[in-house]
Image 1 (cartoon, rainbow, N blue to C red):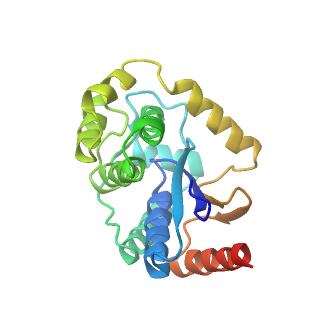
Image 2: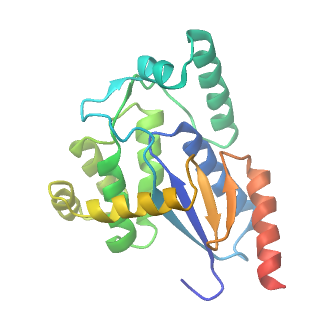
Length: 219
């Protein structure tokens, strides 16, 4: 990281719709602030549904059971998320199933360590679009390799990662560290290892917080 760059850790799960809202809102905030604020954005793992099998589960039944929702409340929640997504340029589509996202986190970790500059960020956006926009399985090897190719990652290397245990221990360690740090809901945005911005906030909230932090750093 360059000496003046602001470090932003975005703790999230591919399966989290509010993480899609929050990331796009954060991106809009960074666009508003402009290039005068140098940032390094890192994506950190968090699993909402770590015990899901590779086959996944019906989304409606799973969400109703997990959060104690009836049909009306679930429909209302989905409508709110679609509205908030549209406001920051993210279009939610139909998603009928929920899936395990651990392999997606392994690929994201690898992209952040060994991928070209910006590839982890691009992969995160691609995963969120594939899952929430197109209803694709972020745990399926063919989907992950397709997205890796889209963002310029080495597909053969990505395949080797997915067909091994590579990056598994590192992802588990990172998840544990964030839990011990008190992160139990996502998205969570941690700036310079000390400032926490919780939830899928609107762009203006992220912009105001980042400007305030930047002013403190400069002062």
